[in-house]
Image (cartoon, rainbow, N blue to C red; front, side, top):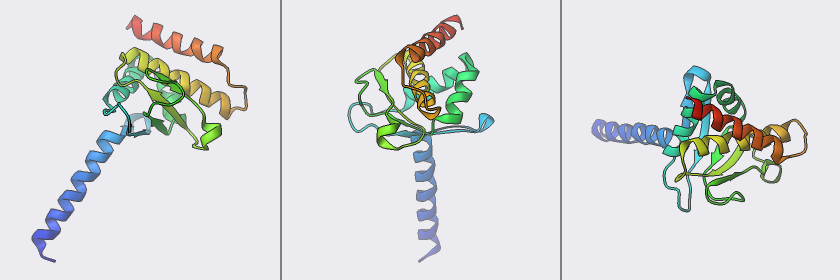
Length: 151
């Protein structure tokens, strides 16, 4: 193999790695946060809304941001039981620790951030062995929307 071919292959692999990392991961070295964003196979072709919503949480509610970073390892952006514009948590069925589902690419950033917090609430309920309850998690997403509106 010639040096020119080796350089081209290396460049292609490096560029490919950075494109995958950029589009399919949310990372923040400051808070040791790395969340895999599964590509949507249906109608949501961009992860940008989800990344922006996570960043919004960083500035609107650092406590929630840190909780998400510490507990959520993967966000599935495909439409699931939450339907379009909603979310779902069913780790107990899929056995994917730290995974939540959201379907919000066309939604408002505040709404997306609230759904991420809501589904993280269910993840925490499950991890602590509590019954999955909507009332607690609705309170969490309402609190986050209020914080976002305040800023």
